Amino acid sequence: MSRSDKACYRMKDLCARTGLPRQAIHFYIREGLLPEGRKTGRNMAYYSDEHLERIALIRQLQEERFLPLRAIKVVLGAKDRSLSDKQQQLLREVKQHLVGTSLVTSAPRKVALLPLCERTGITRKEVLRMAELGLLSVFTDEKRRSQIAESDVWLIEALSQLRSAGLSRALGFGPDDLLIFEDAISEVFLKEMTLITERLVHLTAKDAAAIVQRVQPIVNQILVRLHDAKIASFVSAL
Image (cartoon, rainbow, N blue to C red):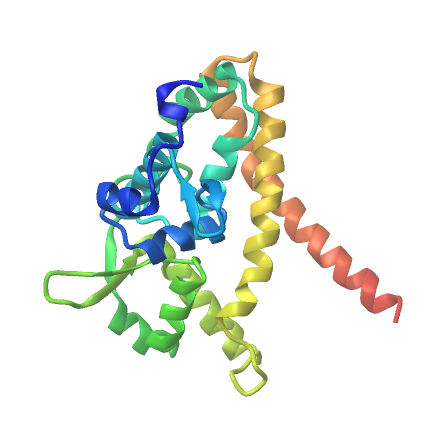
């Protein structure tokens, strides 16, 4: 076992080195963002440099890319899949060819939360619940005003549209119900990513990137049509 793999840190060491409270680290472990430590007793576990590196990556994705925890979980899940070095290199090179497209955005921006809530009718409490569920992240600027990533605005707008369509608070519909779609799409994406990298690994990054761009809207259409077909089949069979 290499030095970096040795479980040599206690929880208090992990907290000191990362600047995170114990509760946050336990939350990461509980949510599957961080592997459990090596237990040596009922209330004692040791952690390794792998945990430090994983926490640093989580914080980087949160603070620099504004990714919510559920998106980070998918990113980490993809990294944890058994991708060969060649597959991982292909993904890095493909990214360079996708810069500037809708798949690889420029530096993310933040937008004020209060005007968004007023416009959509979604309360701040509901947005904070969405953040608690890991669906988006809420930030605070220097004047202590709440903000979210511009790329997450659509999710709040979608919840507002569902409310307007009849899925009201009175009927019990809220942010938690969005997890159904998030969990399903995350699982589909992980399988899709593994399949694509296995099949495209022998292509140049430029050719692979071009295929990804052409395929994405078709896959989106497949998902929509399959969903419609499932509903139609179910209703027809009643």
